[in-house]
Length: 127
Image (cartoon, rainbow, N blue to C red; front, side):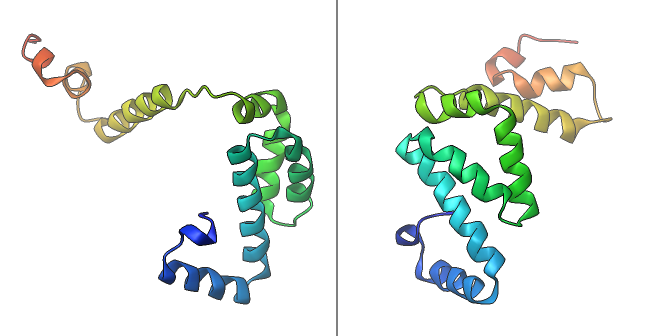
């Protein structure tokens, strides 16, 4: 969902073709770009009208997403307005879950510990 100015020529052509062939794509892209703009401008005042437009868009996935946002509106406002982010912690949690899924049924805590700890710390751990 890059702005047109950030698309390559090939990407811009694809977007144009999709817009010509699908009014749903045009609506979805417009809503996605507006949502991106709300976060970029840090203006939560536009969020309520975006949620209304998204719910009434006829696009099931976008409408569902908007309803979920509406459930915890204060948190969404904070995410828009405040400069803090928990992305570093979320990234580490996602990394751990990915490792656990790839190892499911293959090994025990020892292998998980070996995969999670830095290499030099692994030398000190023995079974």
